[in-house]
Length: 112
Image (cartoon, helix red, strand yellow):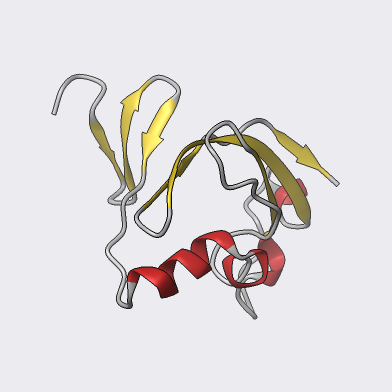
């Protein structure tokens, strides 16, 4: 790993000042996993809902409802309470090769 290529608590790697790479190995067929990445109702079960325009340069919106991901979750830490309710992030699809590769940016947060 280079100077900027550092582990982040086992959840990802920081590869540049503004870039984090998150990789996961998941069970299932590529087609099944693609659905959980691209279909808003399935994606909201593990991350966030929102529409994706699945072409390079296409817009995405991630709609987080963090307090609704897991029943009985602890409340957000002090200073992050506004992220417990709905918040939205916009981004751009950078790569899309169904069902093998989906990459996108995450923009700044907009709370509802």
